[in-house]
Length: 555
Ligand code: GLC
Image 1 (spheres, helix red, strand yellow):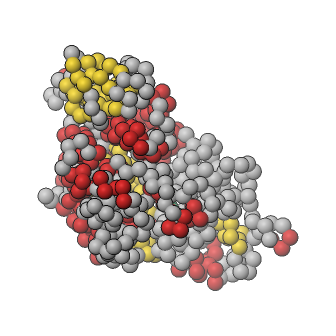
Image 2 (cartoon, protein in one colour):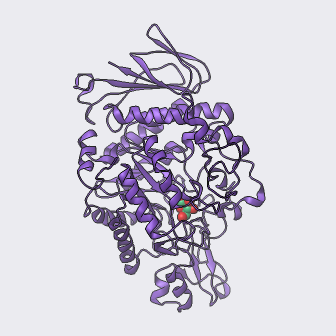
Image 3 (tube, protein in one colour):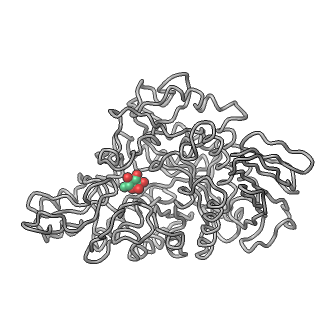
């Protein structure tokens, strides 16, 4: 299959949507954490040729686009989120030619490619930071970062009280006495976005990858680039949480929006609807929506949905709030359950058989909601968090600096085939984190032919979603369901709710999710299309066990 991603097909995708926008309003975007996806050269670390080999799998899954985590040259202090050269591919991940080939092949499979841009900080191995260290205080080289004199006698105390997201002070002192800011690891110095050279460089980097065919960017820490003038103290505990309740002097400052506006203008000069997606941990849904105003980015990750517990009441509140705030800025809502920074949702929802049951139901909920959805690699296999990794194999800097459990457990390499590790991950015998032997029944090969597997559920849901005019972007109408159950219907038609059952395509899709602890009976207004577990349909009713979701179609 070939598809002209940057030409005619984009408008075809728009036509298939609501008519108010393009492919990204409905898209299902699959997150590839490169290091852990597939290893093409046998060194135990995933790479670009590995991703390229598996494009048929991804196209067959039925997603629309891939978001690929950073593969640029990096010392890997934060596994690629510490970039030493924004225009080079790290040799561990491949070459620039591999990146070109991956983009071209993905397009040939009808898949768009979203790259990961890391603008809040560079690596301490970036030429700019090296030059800054070699230069004097007050120099233009130091002005690209946030160097300050310390407080107290001899400047021996950090310039303010900010803490790193990974734990400890957000400041490190350099020989000569000044301190530099790093909201993350000391190996990730924060850039100074008031510096014109910084802005110009990132515009050039965007153009570099857009010219190579990238369909857009996920913007790392999109809420962090601008810091409050004077770098004031926070003065209270709990300040470094990514998702807090307050605007912090280093997160969600109004000034970041001007940067996003300039990038939107740049993206719009390219054909094919190239998009920007904010990784912004904004304190409220309202503030998050500001990142997707019509002249800013196209989408923002919905971490309020991701962090909502398994509870119908709370979940409905988050969904309603997300839809309301996204609609207020004419953006599509987005839905995400897992990524490379959080505990996998099978485990978050209780783990074991119950966690998996709920995760499968959550997949049907997520893919039935209006807007765009994200799938984190391995969730389509029902993978849980690996909680028992031995201490000596842990590698996440967050863990090393003593903050929380660390993120290794959601980054374990994917099991592809075979009866024992490395489960076809690569041609070598090793993987950079060990794969649990118990994953032999979770491999792609093991699930491939099983109609009841989680992989089959995702494939079916994505196929139905793609073909159904009622799913993707558009209106949602809540139905009154039994206690503990979310129930709604999706009707084909514009965002104003026009169309509905009378439109030519004419069919609506209902979705019910039982988040309670008792089996419920729901009135089904049509035949079940798809269910996340066994359901019984009889006499116009569907019996739904706890942790189960169903889609039905209304003729
Ligand atoms: C984002 C990334 C995370 C990284 C951090 C610093 O939150 O998703 O993996 O550690 O930014 O770049």
